[in-house]
Image 1 (cartoon, rainbow, N blue to C red):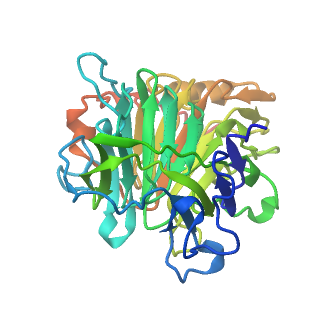
Image 2 (image 1 turned 135 degrees about the horizontal axis):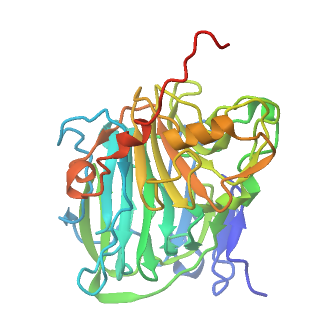
Length: 439
């Protein structure tokens, strides 16, 4: 019997052991005097010990060596990660980026860690309150090195190329149109199969949860059963040349050497795990009479603040669906928002910006900066015959929305050389249709 590669359920208590070592999980207790197979017990805490049961997150790992066996950490000068939000003057303009460039492999080998570039963010990890948006571009796999994030959780959105992610909990294959979340402290390595690109939403100080459904009821949006968690897998591998463990700590990278693979967890149990989700599984809710429901109905995951209904960050998608609203301007409305909206495109054409907004690019509409459909979209949608129509077929756009005011990095505004200086021109052809005599 082959074990399935994943277990399902959001935030569940799971238990898993590598089938090569049956009975590796201790029975009836977490921390026996002697663990089965001579393993070490190690707890990974994702919440304060005293959090209410509903929000308490921890897992117990049974491993060949505990993760404390490493040489001291030293600063690692690599990549374009930052949380210095003051390195360049703020820019309130509507910002749009062309697709971010992936380096060509033979000349410039770049793995997931060296390919991390911070685009924008706010807050800071020491105070445990903030977010960052990163772009990753890479062309080579991580070899004998892993990353863990001491600052917060990574929500990873691959856009081009699949990721084979090895974690202490097991392996996950994550392809474009899927997402995965690697939570604070979890070691992981990314294997790629060619030129690879995607987006990361990082949150400090909160974990992602499923949004409350309110009057929608018990079912809809992202269903808990569709979230997948890896099953235990271990390697007992010595690395005499040195295995590098990289920690992202207070916004900077540090590296420590050890002589064994960190993926030596033979069994584990708990509710603090990495997980993945396929965006096609999202059960879309939509307006079926007139007007718009707000885009919050497309929220997949949310990281909450202490203020009710105000998100540190929401992950929102705009999936294929039917548009049927009568007597309604159907594309997204013109808008000024007390939240910050970063948008990315995984594939296809976004309905409000058919031109210019491309897969692998992005846009940022900052706090109270106006935005909305371009002139072409407005004219077409104002005259269209309103019949039931498929919206966004073959497309997947998404939004990282935050209650924080996001600062753009120097890399985002200058170094990347991907900023579209002509973005504002898409609204210039909008003209007045006002006629005081015609109601």
